[in-house]
Image (cartoon, rainbow, N blue to C red; front, side, top):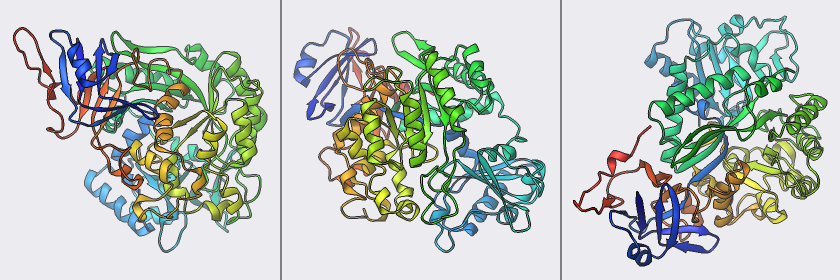
Length: 574
């Protein structure tokens, strides 16, 4: 089948556009003007009039949590809550609507106490007891590194006054030695332990929901940190394979980022499963690879918002702490050496500047200057010093960053670390100028999955929800232009996943993975970028998602019978 896309504005790279594409067997075969491509069309070619829409390479989110994104649909949505009372109201409403049996775990997510308007504080067991005393409740802070529990949850987990200290974590206690319900970092596993695992059906449903959401936002590929243990790896892979067997071949291309706990044997247990970077788990003839093993994913520290990110100096607004590592540094370095010796790429969650120092030093031991063939990288790279970024550039260490993180962190950064360090942090412009390899993503559901919102933050460093303040942008020297942001969200992420020869660009020989946008964001004022919408998503030249009908002409197949193919039948196939 030959498909022709014409009457479009198709982005091919900085300053380069074309009008039309010829697609055969899922790949781009030619790019040029509409008249040129149409004139060379074979009989029976399907023609799609893009009606002037902008076409970009499909977005590639370099780091998120797909299963958790789907799971959020059945949780208490705490996003944007401005008070403990608002969280309590939402929790009661969800329990009243879903009516779970007493004793059933009820989960919540997206909470950001920094948005509380009166008292900016963590929730306590007493707060959550007001939601329910008969359901064990766990609400996760939006960063994912702190959880809040009610009294029943603590009792079911056996966490009382005698609760032990946790390596790489904190069970917060009040002045009487009683747990407050706040569990930081590794301590959260103690409360989550009694939660029954999802059934295979529930797991597939979560993944499907998240995959559909990704497609609706023009995301055609992603790196998903779903498995955290070897056993979870088995269940996750099985769930994806069953989705494909059930007809889910229109979903985004997934690279699995494989997490492990700190237990010594977990790395070897992954290798016993042949879970090594690059192993193909699902390939579809004529459409390419849809599931493969990617990097080992490690956690080195916590989060800025939760004040658990590992800093060199105490927090300005909480001088009794400078955060902490969640992996002992010698063990962390040994894990990286062992993984690299087997040819496995490693990416590590790293936020504080002390953690950055440790992560860069550990990655330097397995990469020589200017040579990083396994493309080891650092996820987040938030609180940084220029010298650290220079070392990343020299060693070609990948930065997997999330511009949309500024939506929350912009309002606490200077209070947390001071203006001098704030000025060299979230330093996307410096990364670009130094030549650090950069890929963009969202860490969803930690932040909004929408790539167009991420582009807006990268280009403006202004909050679209608060009148685009500050006026010049937050530390404006770290803004990037739109072409750089799009390239980081497409070609940069494809490079991070060793997919740069087939994905991330609109070039002959590449898969026809495309996102069509309802307006030309290159011609819009920067503050309008986030208002644009994806109206069609293609993978391997096939439409896998379409917005409201009428924006495009339905594709027409010209054949000897004059057959017309129903465009809508090809959409929403997950």
